[in-house]
Length: 395
Ligand SMILES: [Fe+2]
Image (cartoon, rainbow, N blue to C red; front, side):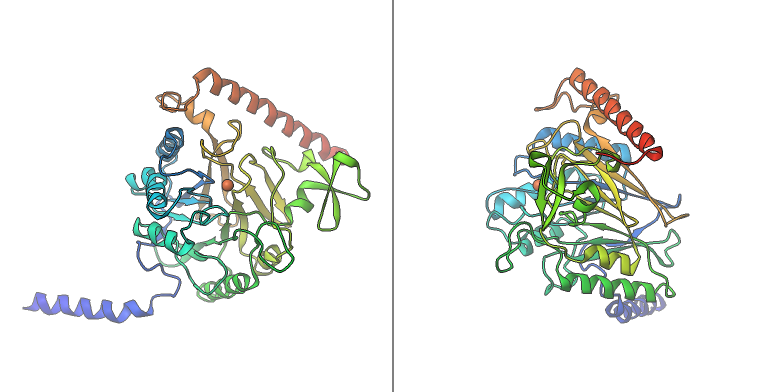
């Protein structure tokens, strides 16, 4: 009898406490993210798989082997996750692209890209499918532009406080403003929500901002001002015009760390997201997909901007840059983080890898050529940066 009344008490306390859980707690999947006993938290980033219900076997194998290698605490899909016609096929595509993660019981979250909802299934419907599979992404405020804008707090290893925060932002599809064109941007209402939520988190943290990372599909527009040289006059094919300014067609080598194999495709409007991050002061880095072939990392006004290349072997992409990203946070110093790109060729050349053997895989000799080429290119970049540390920057 005593035991029953004790159980009743626990139930009553739980029922009293549940309604006062913070508004940003996810409602279906278990959303408790926490630093490990070793003080580390690892996030695996998967960009642009962009495949249908018959997911390319090589993509699946890259996911399996990168998960087994890194053993992440969370996986984040950076948008353009699936491209299948109709509800049933989209559902199967989502099941396929998340299967390696779910099979290993790793928590996962997503943001949407510009292609996810192009096949007659809305982002709301897609999010419902994802959430049914345990996805942590939720719609914090459904009235905002986009779907799945939310934040995921990471608790300290002792579980006593929010030590870190992850922003998942829907950067939209295409700009539908009157007379506008190009890709969509992060809207004012999303930025307002971001600032308010960050302030709420800071208030709960004794007035100190909670350090954070931002994940979205499309890069911020300031990437052009950082990566390319601003020119005073047009230079034919060597220059390009954008938003009333003239830029070099190719990036300035010294500003580039990683591959630039296609033009960056940000929105054609300065949306104020970078200014909002600077004002709040919480975001250490932004990670995006969208430009499949690029893997550059740059720093804009103190915030790292990192292009995670496409993992999709059925999407347009280049073998030299293809891979997944790995972010490692260390509770001992949350003013920083580490990031590395895990190349497909390095996975394929690891002992026991099945990537060369699955349908669509390349030979080991091919992956060796990719690795050697990559090491040479990266060494050249390092030399460039070293040289220009002592001499003025030129194109
Ligand atoms: Fe894409």
